[in-house]
Image 1 (cartoon, rainbow, N blue to C red):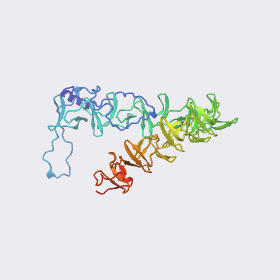
Image 2 (spheres, rainbow, N blue to C red):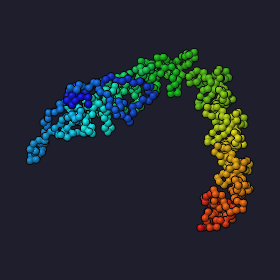
Image 3 (tube, rainbow, N blue to C red):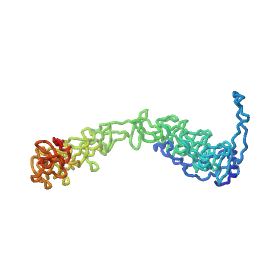
Image 4 (tube, rainbow, N blue to C red):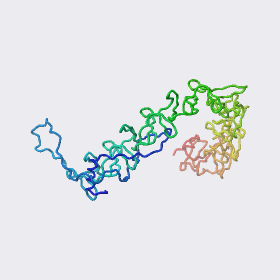
Length: 538
């Protein structure tokens, strides 16, 4: 506390007599375009004035010499007795009004009622609200957050009401001191808006619901034709920004989705219009930038295909003769610098494109001259590896789709008749090969722990090979049988023995395990059962 108990109590009385402090001028804020979607959102953080911290003292607060008396006079009860009460039960004396008083203790202000210190509660004194914390001390110059409500108590501890300035920012508090947010406030014949932070909006666009508003430097809502930044806007009597066509003083004007008055070329509802420097819509013949255009009575510009001198031209959405790339009716077309429509192969900017007899640019798969090509969404011809529809394809530098065996970077790949890159097991020319997820052919490795592909990539079938010191015999399906130089053991990584004649498998520790000759070895019982073997009885 900056003042003694006597000063503060006197000041509190002064606050009651003097009323609320007038707000200071509102802070300027930059004015975003409505397209920036400036929206007043629900508050998730403390107000802009950083309620968690104690703001600087309010220089506009009343002087400390006007505080309330430390010993307020008691008033008599004003409530009349209940006329229906039983006279026999009438108390001998009316209940005494509680004794309420301010006290200074250790430089802080406290409030007592009948000798009991008030804590964590609001107290109304001389029509002003004061808050005392959990320790009973009066809160001053700080934000208070209680439930869903924010309050601000001034230098003297009184809850602010009305439009008030806190740390250079204007807020609005209702008669109970509750900070208002996300609503319009009508005051002194004007309307201003308090945002989710509680701050009064100034010099900014407001997007409320599906409507746009603008508030000036004082926070007052704009109406009529108003210049904002470099553009002109129109606002209805209730402040809502106008959009679309609007007739003003006998001429038609167009206010875009942003609300800004349009000038020059404008495409509206699929139709082109020309709006002069004043914004007024053009009609009839108009020469614009050295080119002639025609606008009907509604202002719509004439467009469409035109065949001139044996060549096709397009007078596009701008009405001017089309050149270069143009998207028309969902397809892309290419026009020379003279405006004539192109067909066939065209190289542009290092990429190749194909334009059919109609002139429409090719996209996706196209068979041209008996060869398959692929053109991406931009129309550019594909080369190299391309992932299309979940499969990989290889195209030459000339764009032709590759098929069959292809060696790339030291690895072999196989591309089927459709051009799709092979993965997993593939039977090619009567031989099984395995291709990993990248499409590269596997060599000299075990596949699925059961099959082996040699250095050519071919799966071993109906043969015996020594691999890593073990003799493996592969059946006609490529499954292996191990014989360890005539012994009776399986490798440590596949210890389960399978007897082919009985179709019984033995786990280590089973009866007869040591005398069972392994025609097949498995790493797991599940693997053995998948091969048609059954577990031995214990």
